[in-house]
Length: 166
Image (cartoon, rainbow, N blue to C red; front, top):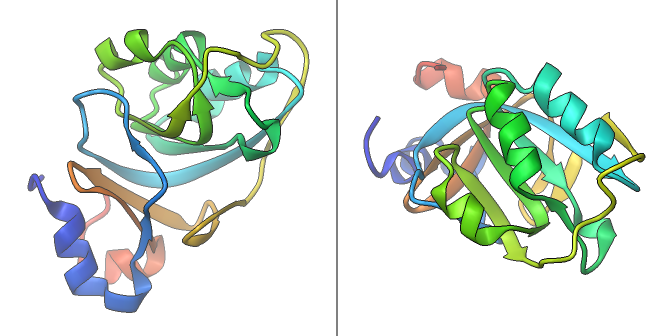
């Protein structure tokens, strides 16, 4: 994969390409692509970790944590679950914790910011559902490509008309 595939995708897909501008990389592994798996966690991280282990295989996981205010929804435990579950990358729309540990992780991780306060490790729920970002709704129909320039989304049916899905 080219180091700047996001630029190529923007050029090829014009208005069908949506940039995810509010997130930045939390480690040095920036290259990824795959179908989106949007998740909305509520209250605690227990079920989020179960979903990361069971449902993340070959997906770019997008976690909506914006409704948790100044609390992080993703930390080193969730990174381990996502890696063990076979996720291709994780994008957190919200805060992450354990930034130093995430920097060493081999799994590409992007997020809006960091905060040491995590929501509860126990309890809570998590649902697969579309999540809202500045680029519009992110659904399971989206294909996400990430590199050093950031992340871009294209509906996977449109994407596969011009480029090969991985």
